[in-house]
Structures are given as C-alpha cells and as structure tokens.
Length: 195
Image (cartoon, rainbow, N blue to C red):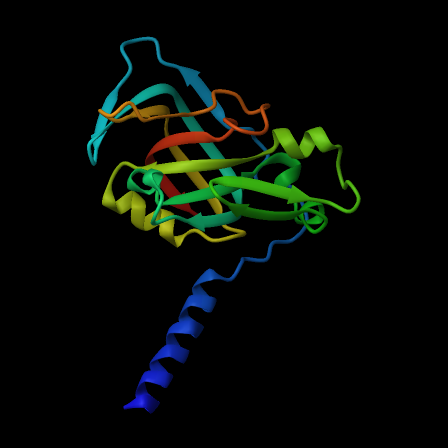
C-alpha cells in the first residue's frame, strides 16, 4: 500500500512540474501593442458573483506574454480572482530583455529585479503589470488555468470595481503607467485565449 502511495505522489509531482513549466520563446518582441482601454459612454454593465457586485469602469483588451502566474485560494479576493498574472508587452515580451529581468509574485503584487537594466527602468514599469483576473464563466476559468509562464494570451473584458455588502471594496487601476500599491488592474474577463 505504501509503495502505491509513493508512486502516486511521485506521479502527481511530475504532473505538477510538467504542467507548470515555462514556455521558451526566441528573442524578439512577440506582443508589441499596449493594452487597449476604452471609456464606457452608456450606463456601465454590472455583474453579480458570489455575493459581490462588480461594476465595469472601462472596456479592456490585451495581448501579452505571461511573465508569472500565481494562484490564490485563501484570501478574500480569491472568491473573485483565483489567479493573478504578470503580463508583459512591448520590450517586456522580448526574451532577450526578460533574460535579464527576474520576476516574482506574492501577496497579490509583482516584483522585478535586475542586476543591470536591459532597457530603461520606465520601459519595464509601463510595459508590464500584475493583473487580477475575474473569470466571467467557468469556461474562462478553465482557460486561465491553462496559461503558464511564456504563454501568449489574448483577453477582453472590463476593468472593474468590486463591492460587498459589508463595505469591502476592490478597485482597478485605470492607467498603465502607475506603480506600487493600487497599480494593479482588476479585470472581469469575458474572453481568454492561450496561444
């Protein structure tokens, strides 16, 4: 019995490692365009999810390279957003640049470190972001779970504000050039494609 348990644990570990490994990409920019954001002119759409009211602030589309993926289960925000992605576009989608930038995530934030800047600091800041994704459907959630470091993804939906009856509030950044606390995008994701 112990032998089968050990074999099962090893197989599970190999499966986890294999599914989570990053995708290698050749040098060169592979997601050139910055995210697109558009104002909502009519009354903003609202969505209900797990007791939260989610209100659209702007429409949002993005094609980007996945620089990091972090799954969450135990914080309150996991009710809405079970996974955060760090995305890069422009120079931050280029393997030549990324080979000199170390990316990590934790506590719903994204960190980067360089020993020597491959591009100016501001290029790193405005061409990458940590984004909290709220899947609009179970199918979108399945797609989110397929993406891994190195994937190219295309998504569309809304930058949003989420509220709960007890006064809790979570609001998206509405600009790509901010940094630090409050700079992350909170996105209601209606379409998500992994390439």
